[in-house]
Amino acid sequence: MPLDDLARTAYGEDHEAFRQTVRRFMAEEIAPHAAQWAEAGIVPKDIWPRAGALGLLCPTVPEEYGGLGLDFGYNAIVDEESAYTGGATTGFSLHSDIVADYIVHYGSDEQKREWLPKLVSGEAITAIAMTEPGTGSDLQAMRTTARKDGNHYVINGSKTYITNGQNADLVLVCAKTDTDVQPAWKGVSIILVEASRDGFTRGRNLDKIGMDEADTSELFFEDVRVPITNCLGEEGQGFVYLMSQLPQERLSIAVSAQASAQKAFDLTVAFTRERKAFGKPVIDFQNTRFVLADLKTRLQVGWAHLDWCLNRHNAGELTPEEGAAAKLWHTELQWETMDKCLQLHGGAGYMNEYPIARMWRAARVTRIFGGTNEIMKELIGRKL
Image (spheres, rainbow, N blue to C red):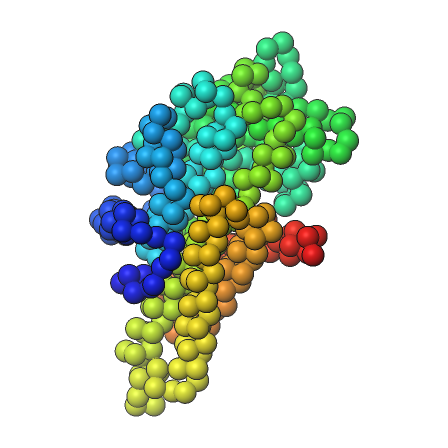
C-alpha cells in the first residue's frame, strides 16, 4: 500500500505496529460492509465496541480512565487508514479526536470516570452539537439556551449537521447559559446531555451529497432537564474551550483530507495504466503524466507539512492559526486532487460504481465543516 512507502517523521516503530492493527480492522471489519452502510446511511453501533477492543477509540485518554495514554499520532493513524479505506468510520475521528479531548481537558473527575471508559470501549458513542440552523460557522450567534432551574439546567433549542447524531449516547451541547452578557461568547457553556433525557429527540438522518454512511442529523431539545453538574468545566467558558480545542479538530480534518487525496491519486495511477485510448494506456499521454506529476509533488509536500503539524501538536506547540492553515491547505489539496483524478477517469469518474466518484462527493464537505475555509483565511489573516 502506498502509505507504507512514505517517509514519515511523525511516527516511530510503535506507531507503525499500531497501524497494522488498524489496517487489518479496516480491511476485515469495515471495507466489506461499506457499501451496505452507505445505502443505509449509518454505521451500525455494534462496530464501535469491536474497534474499542483493539484500542482504536480514544487512544490519548489517560490510563487511569481506561485509555492507553498515547500521543495524538495514534489518533492520526486511525484517521489516515480510515480515510484511505474510504472514510466509512468518519464518526470515529469525531468521537476520539474531538469529543474525548473536551472531557479529558475540562471534565470533572466524576464526568471523566463516568464517561471516558465508555468512550474508549465503544460502549458509548458521542457527538458535539455546535451548529444551528442559520448560524453556520458563527458560533456566537447560537440560540440554544440552558436556563437554570434550581439545581438543573433546562435546555431548549435545536442543532443541525451533527455527526453521529443518530447513534450518539452522549451529546456535548453548546448552549447559552447567559443570554444578556456582552460580548455574546461569554455566555456560552458546554453541557453534557445523555440521549436518554426526556425532551431530547433526534430529527431525520440528513440526506447528503457525500459521506453517505455517516449519520448526520438534526437534534432537538425541548425542556431537557440535566443536573448543573453536567456542565463541562466552568459555566460561560464554553466558547474559550471550543477555540482551544479547534486546532486539534482542524488537524484531524487535515490528516483525513491528505490520506483520502493520496488514495484518489493511487487509484488514478492504477486506472490510467489500465485504461486505453487511441491504442495506448491513458498514462502514456503527456497531459496525464503532467497532471499526475504535479499532484504527486503536491502530495509529497503535503505529507511533509502534515508531519510538521503532528510533531508540533504532540509537543503542544501547534497554534490555532497553524491548525487553521493545515485545515485550509490540506482540504484544498484534497479537492484539487479529487477533481483532477475524476477528470482522468473520464466518463467512468461520474459513475458511483467507481470509488473516485464517491470520494469526490465526500471531499466536498471538508472545506465547509470544522469552520469553512473562508473562516480559516479570516483566522489566519487576523494574526498577520
